[in-house]
Image (tube, rainbow, N blue to C red; front, top):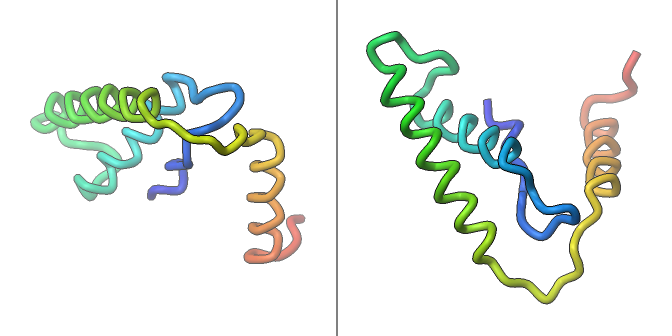
Amino acid sequence: MCRNIRPLNNFEPPATDDEVHAAALQYVRKIAGTTKPSAANQEAFDTAVDEIAHISRHLIDALVTTAPPKNREAEAAKARARAQVRYGASA
């Protein structure tokens, strides 16, 4: 359920608001234990996603590092290689 939560700090280009929102959505889904809330819980669910995305953006913007920014393409290639080892060759 939380596969879309990726490290978002120290990338070039920086994490987009869409990426931050997607991570917040996955976090709320995990905490709530559901991927689709009931109509009665939809407003609370959406509010939680918005608030977590907001504070996550503040966190990412406030973090300081001396490490060089990571390359998105290189990190994606590493993830694909790990998946290849873990799950075997794709069809």
